[in-house]
Amino acid sequence: MEKKVFIAKDIMSTELIMIQNTMSLFEASKVLIENKISGAPVIGKNKKLRGVISLRDLVKRQRASVDDNKILDADTSRFFLDPSFYLSPEDQVEDEDLVVEDVMTPLTLYVDETTPIEEVAILIVNTGVHRVFVQSNECLAGIITTIDVLRFACEQKLF
Image 1 (cartoon, rainbow, N blue to C red):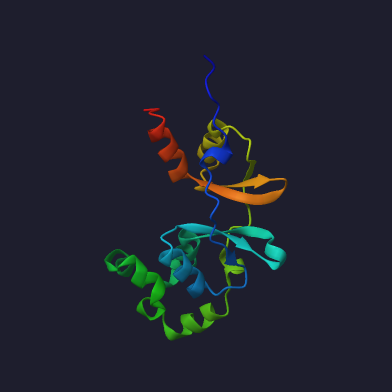
Image 2: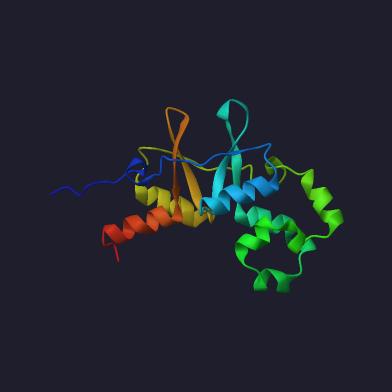
């Protein structure tokens, strides 16, 4: 009996939450938190993929102006939704001028929807990314996250 080869299309999520490249950092944080996701594709004009924004990108942006103890003591949602909690008024004005494109990761990894899941997992491990975009006919068709790969492994009783 031949072993079934699972492909990216089998585990990808197709309901994508997109973030506009011109969105404020505050609004982007709000979208990520409200949807309980750690990152999302960033699109520009004509819905063209520009990169990816993650909570980590947003935290790295604020890192220099934030007291580490405030981060450890804070509720995560308060950290993102209440800038006055960790930013001085001068920093808040500066950050109001920044948009998602200023802090996003422009590099994005793609796989075709027919790529075997094993190859997707190897790509994730070798690059250290948490999300890989899936394309079909050169159009964004979905996303595979580390959670999707782990869920698949559990469902297939791979360990």
